[in-house]
Image (tube, rainbow, N blue to C red; front, side, top):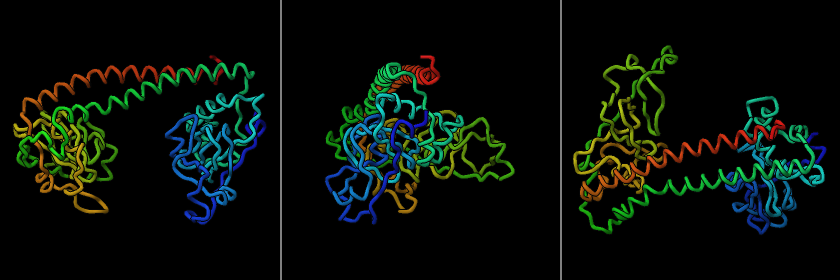
Length: 369
């Protein structure tokens, strides 16, 4: 059965001009894609709103109606928890025939189609959505009790998945929380550790870029990772480089991005381009301590350029760093390493949960659940 056979499909609308105080900033919630990506299945708009006059020029929807994003995150569905207006980046499903279709089942199917985008004829429509394409989307409709059973099973499996994600988000704060507990705030230095400049605690050198000729691009894949500002760009064979590129030795080093100032660790042997520094501690600090400190503090005062912010070598060396005893830093390293081992096991378990959930969804809409 097609979606248009079980509900009314309407396109969202936005009052013009955008931002006009006659239409915007009133008491009527206006749904945004960021609301949907934040909340998941049941969404409550918190980001934008309309006046009563603006709502009359928009597309009002009721609590319980399904909506589907057609821009920003094409194909992403949600169920409204409250009355709200939708703009022209959404399609709304009104007056759903709930004697034929269970709303949670339909949400799960739409989300399944969204995740399959690019993997089949049905999913492919979600690359460039129109209201007519949504109207014509075929949906499987087993008997209503079976729809509810499937939706309940997927809800329970998804709840487990969400709890694991929440646990992961909490675990992601461990390193910074431990740093604060052991060393205090990196800016105020309330524990009054001696302060040294970054240049006194570590040496650093700029990476160097070696352009790759167009004729060699198909040969790029190689043994060593090639790092830039935000991580690995590629794996590159050494024969594509000469002495103008920087190859770091086996001991590993701390790479500090310049265009997006953030510190991260890398190990083994690798190439580094001119968008990153390579840092080697001199005995007063550990790599992990320095990296965590820089990631926790604002270094805007040391960054130059507005269009493309850069953390140059000279300014990096000026950053003040509290210098607690090296033994305490090494204890921090050990505790983080122990936690990382636990996180690795947790990540493996998460992959299993994710795989199980995806398998359930696949089976559900193939009639095998």
